[in-house]
Image (cartoon, rainbow, N blue to C red; front, side):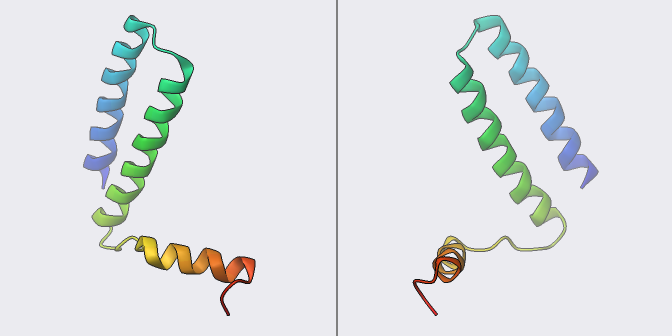
Length: 70
């Protein structure tokens, strides 16, 4: 798991330097950070031998939370 974290940190720092040099807009940083956070979460779950929930399960859970499905 430490290897996964180290790889993401190195890639993030490398990409961040390129973004700063090219002077990208703030929305590019937000999109990049959200994609990296999502992929880091999935990678850490897979490294810990825990399978992430499927999108169908997440949608069903959300519908149960708002009371559409019982």
